[in-house]
Image (cartoon, rainbow, N blue to C red; front, top):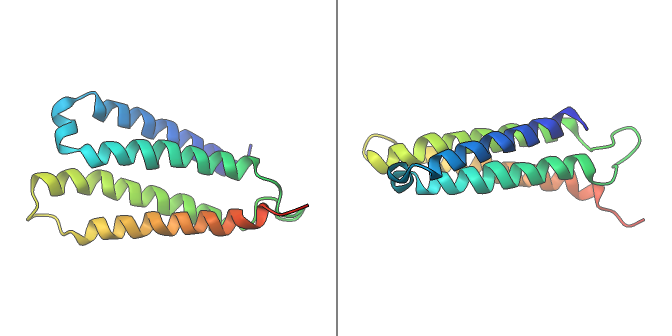
Length: 130
């Protein structure tokens, strides 16, 4: 298994635990509802899908079996930076809307969208007709 796939899968497990912990605390869930959903859907499910797909999809070529390594690493970084920004910003914004600028959530969303695009760009050539 390539190191990046292990990073994705280990990160997914960390986000699963974090999401379950947030969900187990009812007062925290009231404040951090969107955070809970992001931890489970983006953090756990999406990371697991990205990691397994990066590992298991057909090889791109003998020289670069998984496509562009720089794009794949950037995808991992963007997805996690966007998720961490959301996990921090959403509850703070819910508790103190005047103290945290809304553009921080926009930056988080753009990072996550860029990660999705990077994943698609890196994975698409690996799905080819033989």
